[in-house]
Image (cartoon, rainbow, N blue to C red):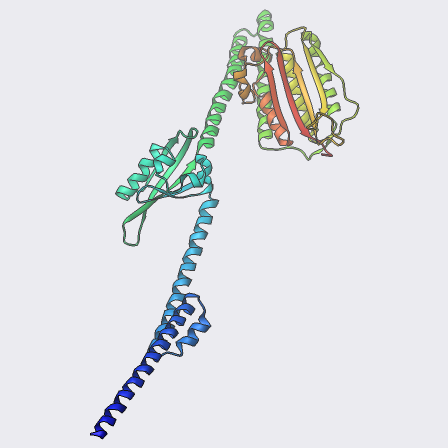
Length: 434
């Protein structure tokens, strides 16, 4: 009987001790797994691998596989993230506007050119509905067509907000890995300036053709008249001066066209230091006869000392000649033309010690230019008073030539005018020491 009791006692004691050891072991294993999880979460590879070596082999292999799998996923995510950043950098650097919408037509990406085109901030439109953020029905309908039918499109579209733009729009759907349409991308090329230049070119060709056709037709008609009466002295005396006049007009027009072509191409001789006082003096000497004939007084008091400008003397002489000749042509008899040459004043109105820019002004008391015409006076063949310009022998190219030569010299040109009071042209040129 006592033996049986002792046996049960020792069995119970062994069971208690086994339970205690199992409980301690379980707590130690739980603590070790907690430490493993903490080390794994903190990306501490050394501690993670050390603790993994303290568990059974199967669990250790599991932890090692988890670490390797996570490292592989992270490398893949890094590569995808870098690829995405590279793509965004490329799209951001494009001159064409690029924008992307999701499947609900909400904006998810706009590059810098798109923000500039629509004059919006990224924080104001990202995530917003396309038609609300960028109010253009042409753009919105093309995007929704791509989202609904998965179709690409290319078309010319007019944008009316924030200002009128003529653009070429390309839209394509974006597909997910499952083949479903997940969004759409649009590339917008701004053609506004290109179309404007095309219109200018067409107008130039039309105007040049008209300007050339008139003197050629007159020369031909006069020549045919003289051909039928080769011995009629009175007829020859009557028609020969107009023939010579039209030939000279044609010669001036061709010469101005060539000068304009050279100016627009930036073709010029090597720059040297040029004394603008001498340039103005030479021009006034060549126009002295015209000013006296028209009864116009020219006022020019050369300044004592002005720094030279860096440029082409012949080109600058043509600039001054065209401006003064224009002033004489559009100023009635008894009027005045005034020229001044001064350094560009500082912000407080005082002359600088070493002027960086010199300002040449040509003012007249002529008929003036209507305010509506001021923005266009530098266009080729544009004339405010067409009849007067032709009667004075003008070609309509003089101010266009002036503008291009001044810009070639890094200068700036402005015009101020009031109808019936006169006009002032101001040319700002950098000095050789500026």
